[in-house]
Amino acid sequence: EVQLVQSGAEVKKPGESLKISCKGSGYSFTSYWIVWVRQRPGKGLEWMGIIYPGDSDTRYSPSFQGQVTISADKSINTAYLHWSSLKASDTAMYYCARHSSSALDYWGQGTLVTVSS
Amino acid sequence: QSALTQPASVSGSPGQSITISCTGTSSDVGDYNYVSWYQQHPGKAPKLMIYDVSNRPSGVSNRFSASKSGNTASLTISGLQADDEADYYCSSYTSSNTRWVFGGGTTLTVL
Image 1 (cartoon, rainbow over the protein chains, first blue to last red):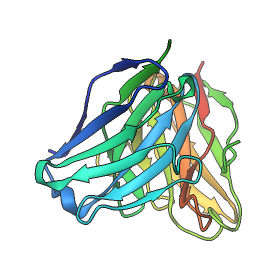
Image 2 (image 1 turned 60 degrees about the vertical axis):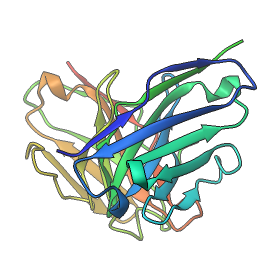
Image 3 (image 1 turned 30 degrees about the horizontal axis):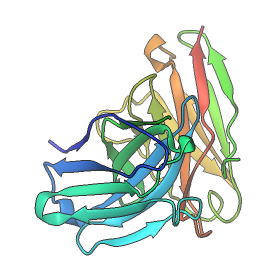
């Protein structure tokens, strides 16, 4: 069974750093792209970026370039989303999803990030 | 502002059919057959309902169908059921440097 399991909810202060994770199982983790998607409270889905764990090839949506870093450790089937300095506007639910050809066929359960002073 | 335009809300009675539109441009929906649709219930992760314009993943009810004409894709849900009440998002590949885009989402209310 394909599963993407994300790390738990986080509460952080502005300026702090954070790395959240997404662990894949039940399939060849290095053979599919992983996408990160942001959903702010009460808002729609936003495509953040995509990584191929096989070789760590990474692409960012222009809105997120320089704001976050996407990485992966194929030895433990895990992808990451990292912020070096959080802002209140980063408060959102973050989803990882497996990109299969042309769609996101499996999704993680989401990680809620709350940034507040 | 989202790259793909969806109506904010649609509604229908149980048993009826509804259609949700997703309008893009010749740089995305109009030029690629890589349109997908996602269902999201409150507090849950999105679920893939349609890929490659009109294909249903295994396990998705055949009450869900989709198509594309020009720059507009459409999702039709027939025989509406209470559990269909959710938010629906379209997505498409785009030749712009964003690579992939979502629509703004449509809230379906089953009356």
